[in-house]
Length: 281
Ligand code: COA
Image (cartoon, rainbow, N blue to C red; front, top):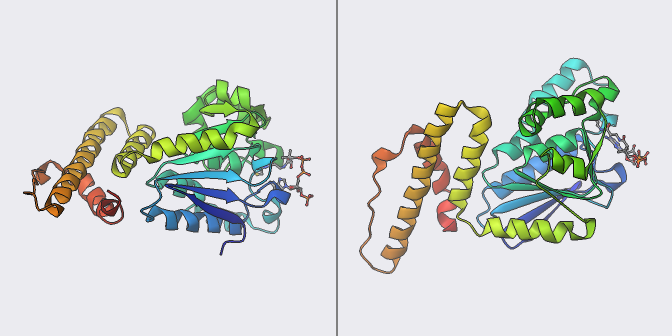
């Protein structure tokens, strides 16, 4: 049973709440570990199509890494911890869409967690920042990379070099968040969006997420090539699903999928997909 997060299932949507409101949901080692474990569990949970991450209480989404844990660590210890697979990478690589429901301070590692999610919905009371520079350090959870890709170099540079906070409207204006709602509507609006996405084919969602993420990882030619592979993969699974459904009804199976069209990368994805996703159809 996790101690620092809450996990709630609402139909096809899982809600993970970082639950340290007295510390403004700052990420300590336990929180990171429990969040990563929760994502691991939800990864293969057929019932869950979309994950929403939020912070407990009314004040904060996540106010950054737990500053108290910095003390007493050598640089090499800190480097080893930070180079290990992080919750930021876990969220980015998670095969289902993740929405950050931002309900207050979204700072440092909190902003980096939101940046690692696929969509960010904020309350009008939220405040955003990368304040690490005020501590004489720089972001270490992908902030310099993901923020720059999302809002552009100039805006990212300003936030990271000044460490100043911006409000929700400014975050919306620069493209850091997708939408802003009054605090009392944040949950219903976010859940409405999550529910809408959760109705889509899980394979198509996974392929779409991978394809869009590739835009930042690959050059245009590679990204376009892989987009076709991912599209073909999604359509192959669809064909199989229909054939399977028909065979169940004793109809003649129509397995017309041409496996030669699946490239090496899609073969890998096929293996991955056949496990949890095939049962979801
Ligand atoms: N790590 C550990 N504890 C944190 C924290 C963090 N990143 N952010 C807030 N807290 C704790 C505070 O120490 C305080 O705990 P206490 O009541 O035991 O003293 C509690 O959360 C409430 O914070 P407080 O500072 O009293 O609230 P505030 O409304 O006056 O200020 C902030 C809110 C977010 C402006 C302020 O807490 C802050 O600047 N936090 C640090 C943000 C940061 O630098 N994050 C990046 C870290 S790399």
